[in-house]
Amino acid sequence: MSIDPVSLGIIWDRLIAITDETLSTLVRTSFSTNVRESYDLSCMLFDAEGRSIAQGTYSVPSFTGTAPETVRMMLAAHPPETLRDGDVLATNDPWIGTGHLYDINVLRPVFRNGRIIAYSLSITHLPDIGGLGFSATARQVYEEGLRLPVLKLVHEGEPDTLVFDIIRTNVRVPEQTIGDIHANIACNEVAARLLLEFMDEYGLESLQPVADAIIAQTEKGLRSALSAMPDGTWQHAIDIEGADGPLRLAVTMTIDGDTLHADFTGTSPAIPMGINVPINYAKAFVVYAVKCVTTPATPNNIGAVLPISVSAPENCLLNAKAPFPTGGRHVIGHFVAPLMMGALAQVVPDLVQADSGMLSLVNIQGLRPDGRGVSSIYFSCGGYGALKGLDGAPTTPSPSNMTGTPVEVWEEISGMTVLRKALRPDSGGPGQYRGGLGQDIVLRNDTGSELTISCLSGRTEFPALGYSGGRPGALRAVLIDGRAVHPKGRYFLAPGGTLTLVEPGGGGFGDPALRSPQALATDLAAGHVSREGAARDYPEAFAELGGRG
Image 1: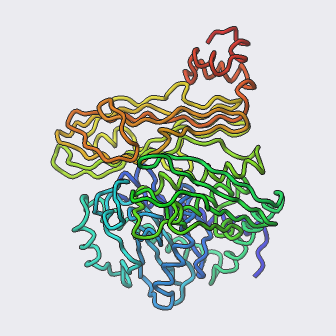
Image 2: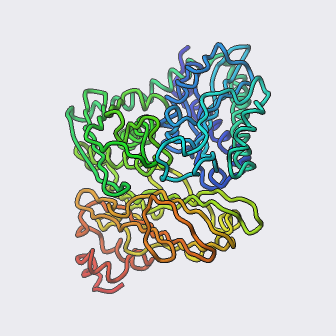
Image 3: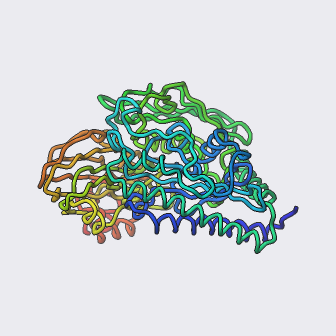
């Protein structure tokens, strides 16, 4: 079957629209703020061969990056010939799914005329999965909660009540956790219905010709972009905060024709703290970084993965094996994106992004004033790294693509009060294009009881670096009752106590001496840069403005 380019574009957009509607259903039916407000989720379609062909627009890059291998392993555990219409598979195994126990991967086969023609996959971060709770303080994965192998959550339309009872019995907020799992099941039902309606409309009995064309076009675009780069090998390394001292991430990137390989030899060993990263999660951010500088406008699918390979020493930070804990794997794994940008900057310096301030997660556990349990994540973020020709956006997560919980919603579900939430002037890294601003947030415990606070962040010692002469952004700080604490620690917050999150700025791009006076004047008027900051960081432009704001 031959598909002309116009028809392919229309069909491709329709498949993306189906995943977007699937994602909207997931958000509307979820019980937790992780999904409903923060969009810690992904929805994707796969063809009958288990190849990803479309994803929801608001899907998290790490999930879309891990999903192809996840689906392959889920179908290896439950081969297609053993599946029946109405079956639903699920797992939260870190080494099959997204790298930690808190994400549930839910897969539904889509049948047409008695045979599988596609799969719908949804992934969400559950509000709880038992154990210590979402934190970085576990010493082994067994402490982090329930680890579910690939299992049938639903048998031909009938939920496995025993599995649901086991999960319900082991979590702090069963209504939210079970509710979110049901939301995953429901959204995949919507995906199946919409996909079959689409196939009826277009008279399709199989998606394979469409899938082949979509994947081939994406793969061709990426291979063409890689072929335009010089062959060679480049190295880059960065330091990040660990438990008691710095840890190192290192990459050797090799471009050979239309392929790219990333090797993480030189990376620090895994440690007995929940910040280790399974290699599938690390690969997701290699793919993300490469796609950002090669084919950012092309919709994502398996074609963007096929030309890329990774390797790493066993049980280094980026290839941790069980039983190393992985609960906070994002606080290391997210840094694979800037690590790769540092290598790519040596090849395509005008296409890379300066480092970002990154995401900060604080998991809150305890009791609300009405006595009900709370187990929820407060998402906040630093500034986005600048690019050539573009200032970094303020308080924008990179590379996670998630959003923060609105103040009103957070206060209602947590029993805490948000005393302050404001942009942080002068926090963006100076440059011809300024890094994005961080923010200051102050939360007060008004629950009347003690809360457990688990912090999962970085950038308290190593700032977001600038590129091409741009300077670093400001550092992050986490304070409890005004006292600085470790960004990966677990603490108790007394009633009336305050948690302060000082979010970092993104790195700048280009020499600050080249920033235009007009851009500086706009920053001064908006309060993004102070007069003192302008005189210090942009003396040339400030002088042209006559030294006034």
